Image: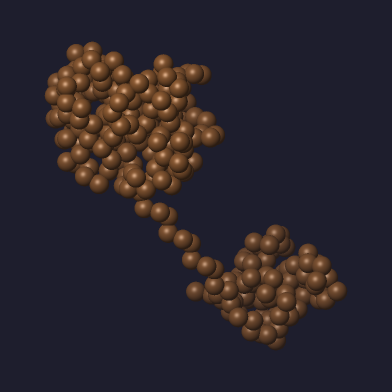
Length: 274
């Protein structure tokens, strides 16, 4: 199992994510409340690479209006989860089922789930309908062992330290994201380096995009000798930079003359001009 939390306006926007794989952020409640920290809490979770969930706290009645209110204010992206917080007194099965079905029709490619307490689940619910999954709140049983017979996806098991703690029935974050429909990040293309043109290519006054790429590579390596640039015209600062780079590598120190050879070129990793 993996661990996560859920947050609302009474938690920090910079909540601690150490050891966490997912976060549910309260978005809306009824038809008149938006979590003032929603955007910041959402951005924080995304920046940390967590699986993201959004939840709406349901009031009785006006199901269609509440669904529209959530859609108006929630920033739900592909691969993120939507949850209905169904816990308020006076709610009924029809309220729950209608909201879940309405939201699913608007977000057909996102997982839509039900959050509720065991008391509501066992004492109020009459349909067993959870759309795509059950998030059960049961603080009286150990993490991963809620007292329900229905299959569950998330278990909220504690509110220690002023924040709700959850587990998810997945072995890894990647498994959770796959279930939620998130597409794996595209692999970064391998860098393309320029072929060595020979040292005679680089003389004072030489103008070339390749000279600019040499300067950029020197800066990436830590060279700080440019007052202006780097630029496309080869000059003394470039020559000094090459010499400096050579002194940083044991295999080149004996040949630190500021001129390119095949080894210096290979180690510097000069990008291919565009």
